[in-house]
Length: 115
Picture 1 (cartoon, rainbow, N blue to C red):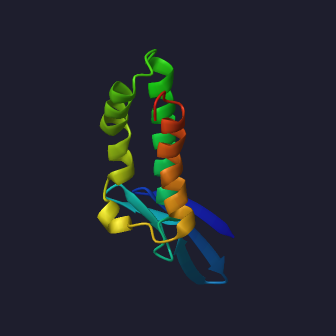
Picture 2: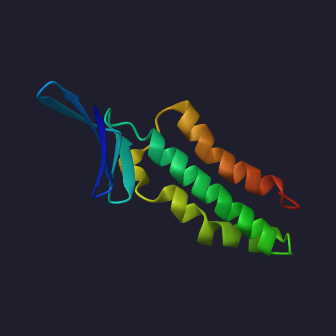
């Protein structure tokens, strides 16, 4: 029997074997930083990368000007803080995580004139 409960943003999977209960956490957010039961920050990095990429795409869509100075200021104001929030805590160590984060900025600057 498998029960799924939502308790204070913690997804808990409860497995029942006879009369014994065991619980596992899928991921747990704490101060806006989520981690899984192995203390890996993969879910958090995937979430912030998708959120920052969407915000960067909206900047390019909403601003008609492709002036590099204006666009980089908008990027630093609206996108960069998403990528840097609590980065001291979840400091990316794996190359794939670093590459995911750098892809957001690389994709944004590729669409600007003169950069």
